[in-house]
Length: 221
Image 1 (cartoon, rainbow, N blue to C red):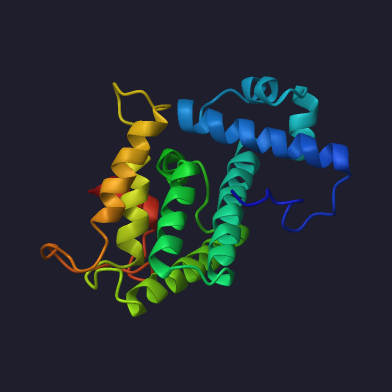
Image 2: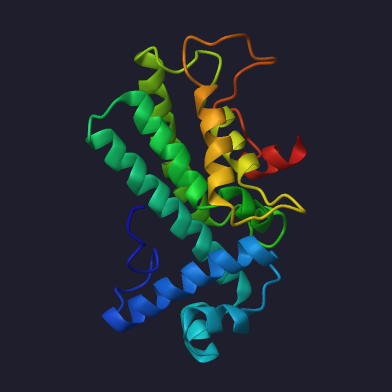
């Protein structure tokens, strides 16, 4: 995956030790929020990160600040990986496949509940980050369409909603079964290839079409 953001979006550059602590907190928080939801105990997140509670609160004064930081951190890595795929001038469909795997590795479906009321979706940093992420994903999708490798009746919104659903926790299953996730992702990606064996029901959705956001769209269906 791409590198973790080196500092808060608007804050000063952190010292090396403070940066390491911040990265450990974000990694532990993402894991805890996926496993236990947004009510995960902050002291447990600090324990997982190997820092004290005071260190956690020094970086993130409250739960919402931590939730937003986790979402921004995930977006940052997806954006970086997508840019790397574009700059590598690799096979367009394989670049899209890489995007799907990277987004799935972030467990984006498990993070969707964070936008269900715990985080303000209108937060300026989050809005700007989502816009950058949507733009780079659309570029990868457009390139795969232009190459003739991506079925014409699938668009960027279809792909990210699909990944969000596939990475949403399913009660009664082992959420750490990486091989099962990879199996389902491969089935999904193979279904995106052109020529398509059949016609998809309904109309394709781009990210621009999904006004309410990927997470809320995936929960609604």
